[in-house]
Length: 281
Image 1: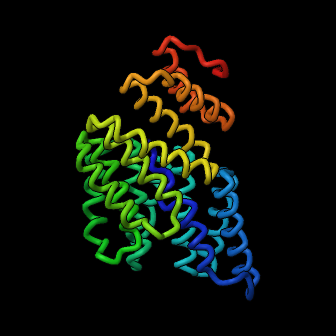
Image 2: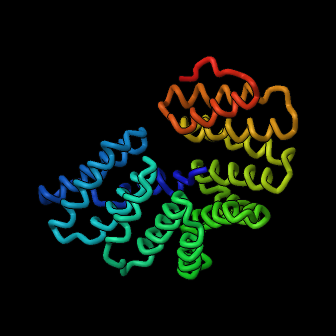
Image 3: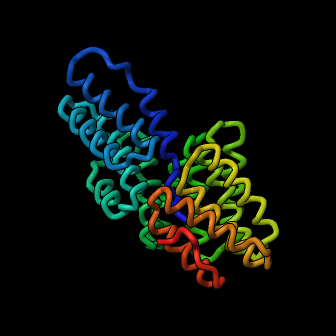
């Protein structure tokens, strides 16, 4: 499971909303325009064009010696590469960046590095980075929920489902009444995965269904398809008769959204049940 949504669209749009209105010098206007356009394209899932626009904005900010703008767009660019599954490229970008003096961007950089390392299967490196991030995230840290979700993911990768569940539930509590629907969906999905890994398939199913409801409202195909895969795994564990239907839904969503990786997993799962996916390819 990829923690792609980790502070992704919400923080990108929030970051852009906090920037000055496009006015004043033409080069600043162009930088703001590129950043805002990148955010809109990211939210629509047009990651290729979003990457180009964030790269353009980063260079424009650098040309006028606007360090916060350059740093902000470097983070946007790294998030966009992670969303495309280009984890090594995102990590290279983050490692090449100069150290941030501001605590917020520095912590965001650490969290993105941890996300990339987890996606690359480098769990020990991710744990080291998360330990450093924990030291920077105090009681009122706005990134605390995202940090807990990454810690949950790392614990799950390390086969510590109870630790994963504790972190995921802590994240959900932090997200309560924040309106951060993407991260709330991630928290429910992680709770479901942790419960399932701990052997509580019955408790995992309603959590996975809650994640699916949220992701449907947000119209996020990759997350919807991933939710159906998880629901299929849970149903298979409890011996439910509608297991194949869940994998078929995952396959249909993945094919419609051109998510070849998830489509392949769903196809294999259906084959394991002796069921051929009617929309597989």
